[in-house]
Length: 549
Image 1 (cartoon, rainbow, N blue to C red):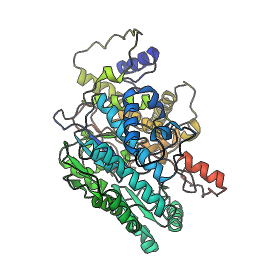
Image 2: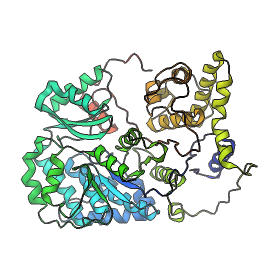
Image 3: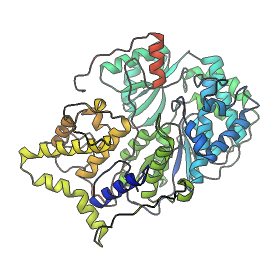
Image 4: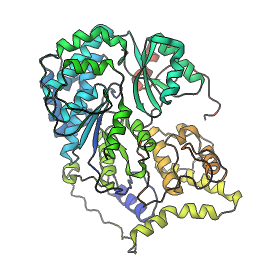
């Protein structure tokens, strides 16, 4: 599939398909298991919010806007502002800062994205939520009415703001569970594990000062960690202080049976929904999140496709890591919906294309605006055995590379990396092999596209973070050369040439669509946090890592 802004982009993408090359907007894939269940919709909790989130969809999608208006009506008896005005950024609306506003706004976006996905032919076969996301998941599954699910988001947000605001915080750490617990030992009860997100992703809750010290200690060890945009210590003993607020505020909700399987991060597996009362929602916010366990339970049940219905993909990497660790291989796929400060319609279409090329039915007339522009398609390649020839094209570079004498291989890999970078930047400019990807204009999404292009060309799986760990074209080419021919660890648990090669076109093809987060020193993990650091005059300084460009 090709995601294009105009006919010229479309023709360039189609030409790349015919040539077996990569191109911006070109999405490729293969149906690994036609009998697998439909997609699981994933709903995150705090952290996906950003100023301006989903605003574009209020104008471009009547389905999305209508659902936002319904959410605003459901919340109207409980708040003095309109969530529609919050998303619009209306002068009379409160800013998207306090938890009492953020949680209802996130809930609204998740519910409205669900309606948008459904209008485009993508129906959830099961749902799983993470913290507050369980309220959106329960509504999507039919277990809670819109009014009751919206009330959960309002009561959670209000209780946390009135009682616990600024008394705690949360930090996301990219380490295995056992390693995180060992790191927390010096702080005793001041810090606790709040969420098991994936094999290498854990959320920590606790006191603000202890979290600051933890971030500094992890940074000194080169461990990636960032603050979650929250001013409370969720899923920790602090929640005991608001138990009565939550249980009393949600006493009137009437949960019912779900129409599709509901997997809970509170219990780590599938559960019935008729007891999702006020006591459950307090227990949800108080207990550690077992999201990884819930995803593994879904995988054991046969689910392979995951759609994160959120304003920014905060769980997609954790899902993808779990897919890989669970030995699902190329049968697994995780896509997002929106991305911070990116074109909303283009992001949704790209994710829709990812689902489509992996076998998910799509309602294209509903997804694409009508157009009178006629596009003349290029002639198809003259062959009949398309599967074999697709593999021939996709692995030709690797075969040619293997045939080169050793001194020439590194140069060929560097040319490959530079060529892919030039394609992704779209300007056709000469790429300096010693310049960092950040200086070249890469963000995390483009870095993952570069990694995916390398995987396709080489027939070899590379870690999704490879462009961050080796941040220049020259460094990346040298690393790949070492992995393929020098016995260097590839970051996937393999060493040496030929390990973890993949047959492009085979049933075991691993395809990963993963979101990566970046951070600045000082615990800054979003544009809003960066602005807060600047406006408050706080320091944001750390030592410069020797292995980064």
